[in-house]
Length: 239
Image (cartoon, rainbow, N blue to C red; front, side, top):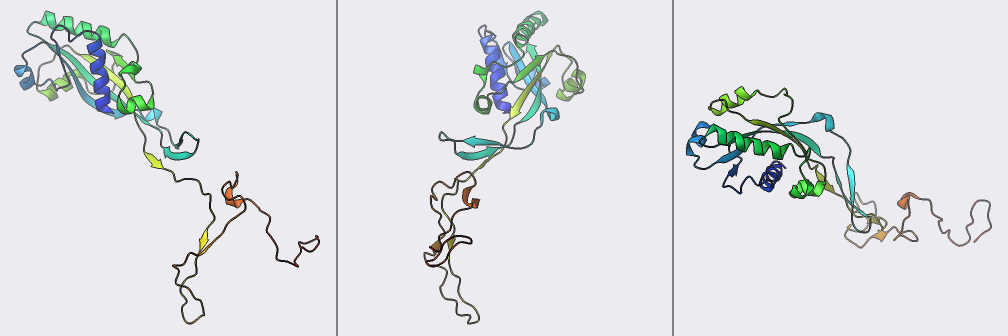
């Protein structure tokens, strides 16, 4: 899911035209060594924090059906995560950096969600809204100075970008519905009790009339049982 969010953000910035003038879009950590090797105007979108949004956690499982409506699997609900990025611009002049940062900010605040046509992989399959927030109110996460200290660089103008994205739940396959009765086989006799058979024969299949369509209650439903000749049901005539 994380790499799919990366790709969505890349497509969002590319669509805004930030690469048309030779600007590089990267997801590298803007460390001191990295900045020294940079040789072109660059926008860095660095992911530095991932945490679950526990308020959106759900329990249970949803059924998956095939084209005929038969249950083929069950999937647990997706879990939502908040991804925090540090967006910075890098050129040889502060004025150019601010211009690039302004263009990136204009692009990121244009919408409150990542456009659906930029979803790939599991994000596209789930079809859920991926919210984004650029330069929003402060959070309880690490401060900008803490992030830059960890990167070993000097404090620099940056956009705090947060994304809320779903991680697809686990899927378990479901077997086909039961349409046949049980098969009973005899077991090998022990202690000379007279039981015969080795348990490998075809056995006896317990069937019900209309076994191919057991109905809503399946094989638990009550069915009429054929009585032997001469026997009669309680309160009825002999058959």
